Image 1: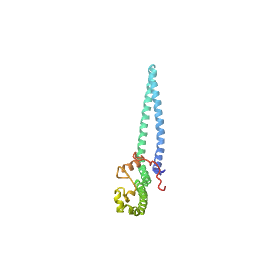
Image 2 (image 1 turned 45 degrees about the vertical axis):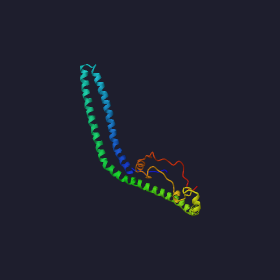
Image 3 (image 1 turned 45 degrees about the horizontal axis):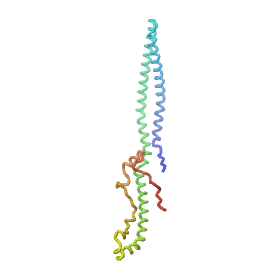
Image 4 (image 1 turned 120 degrees about the horizontal axis):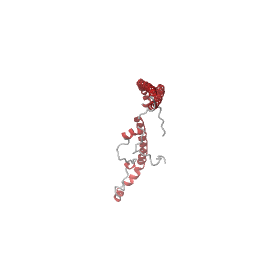
Length: 212
């Protein structure tokens, strides 16, 4: 049976979308600053290599240039730290909206109740068992007097054992055997509630046809 669960995060998804939209500009700035920092680092490395073969006048210029590159890198790092602070502030601002959205969406989740599903199927299962068992007992009661009239005759009883002449209602109850006393296990319901079929639960070997 196919079951389609309604969207559990309608409102929450809207809040997340708003958060990501606000993050987009921060992400763009961060990417640009990091690219600029990588370029500065490459330029600084080239500057150091150039100083190794430069004359005095050139080294003075290259040192001034290197100082400028270091200062620019410091500014970029400070800006990246500011961006990280803004990102944290945005997350803190979003928490209240997120919790409110999750609270609204929780009403959808609350509509899915394992107890109600289990109780419904248990009732249907026992209703079916009762119907089958009732019909079997009804058929037994209809024919029992005729059979017992023969079986309970003293002369017949002398010729056969009690086991051979056994004919009682208990023989015509639905047979059932299970190692555990309960039909539904709490752990099985917990696993199913998490989306996992319990390993002990197997599909029936074949369809049971009641009206053949």
